[in-house]
Image (tube, rainbow, N blue to C red; front, side, top):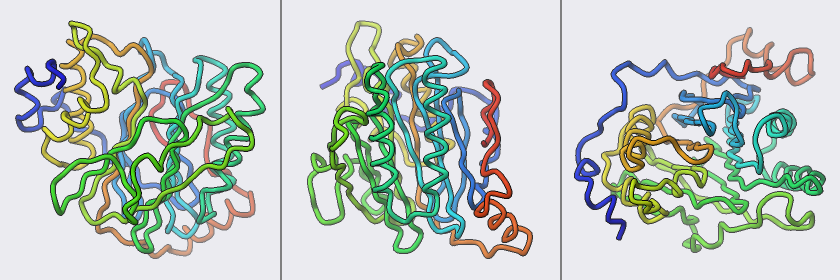
Amino acid sequence: MNTALANQGCFRNKLAPPCSHEPAPAHNLKCMEVWGGNHRMDAGAVTPGLDLWIYSLPFAEAANGGDVHYLSLCGGGMITRFVLADVAGHGTKVSEVASWLRRLVARNINRKSQVRLVAALNERFAEMSSVGTFATAVVGTYSIKGSRLTLCNAGHPRPFLYRAATRQWSIVQSSDGGSEESLGNLPLGIDRGSCYRQMETVLDDGDLIFVYTDAVTESRSPNGEPLGERGLLMLLRGMEAAPPASMAAAITHRLGEFRGRTQPDDDLTFLLLRRNAQRRHRRNWSQTLDVYAKLFRLKRMYEPVPEEDTSHA
């Protein structure tokens, strides 16, 4: 048992946000939009069926880091996709990776399956393996039809799932009862011929998914004890389920308490998703024209993000 967690009674108290100000309103993703980057971020987004929150803190409070995070929404408003990648390295090299990764996400934005996207990511990282660039990643695709979430884990820490019906956190497992080990794959760029397994689960209203980079579980207490996967699970189980904005604030607060208020030793990023009851919106004529303009490349899906900007791209 993680004694550092056990000794912190606050882990069983109600949510305690780290700051007094209200979070900014969540960004409503438009159809054919790609949102994110590798910059510092603490912001929410809404898509049909999902409330989401991205928290990303680059190492040493830099403007950009080695964790790359993207959300996208297809032209029909049916498919939400996310990519969270922990890229080896920092600085300009990772910013270049973030740029072409964004283009790959955009290129696959209307595909129901994420298999081609994952294969393309692996191929691109394999091309860069000679310079020591590879990545662990989780790629997820949520379809509002059937409320199905498909996940692919490429050597990344295992995601967690909260079931609102049972009020329990656990490691993600597939709907067919497959074990969590079935999520494991090699990191991207290690083996060009690797076949990446996918798993699927159905989300009900109020269910949560927590995806994170290894800096979360590698957090250390003042006496040097690592949080670990089990400690993170304890942390989540000691909290009350809440909207992603409140959950994210509480998680960052409690991780900070665990570390004794010291800064993380690496880029730290996590993504929270919550299934909501929102259904697909009917587009008006202006929104429909906007989608077709992007489909025919008459309009960009995104704009360059300034280094310190945490808004959408």
